[in-house]
Image (cartoon, rainbow, N blue to C red; front, side):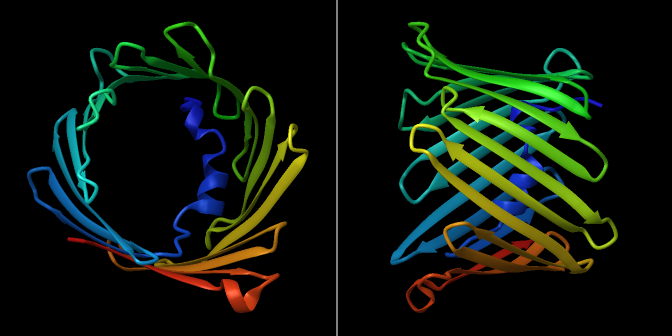
Length: 274
């Protein structure tokens, strides 16, 4: 099996520790037509501010067009073509209006033993990003490099991933070698989806480390609970229930255990699809 793209390394752990944790109020409604058109209206309340977004997606065979408009008057258009000229090759063109310097062309290629992603900004001084993963599903190594037209490397990262049926371990070296991130994901019970995971990040320049540990468990086929805790005393938990196909209600709580009376936050997310 293909090792995937560079962004796939450590993704299982990141999803376990960070995905769906939201301490704001969010509502999303998606309407789909049988002709491949999906329209999503979403609103998020953060403190006293409200942010809105309208997302339209059109699919026709190998072509997908996404158009997103938000309350800040930005319009993001993304055009994706699957199997672009050859099997495993995908092309993605994105542009944010009115930012004329935001255009980007991206190519993704998945092979049995490699995954390559290349992107370039569509402006006079473009930023170039090249990442690659080589190996197999069990063992893979990857590199991620950002460059400019002046051949000045602004970022380079490297990663290693080990995968077995129940355990995934990864190691990232980021920020010019200044940050080391080690993570693991362990699926304890298949039938209940019970899993545990942890991520340790260490900054060499600041001599600081952050450790976060999390777990998840399915109470039934439609209800999942998750919890996480870090070495600074921040604890979070969520309950997510799928009350109809692809429609979820998620309740999240977060508290600083060192100042419980001041820091408790509760978030509610409602996603409807029909």
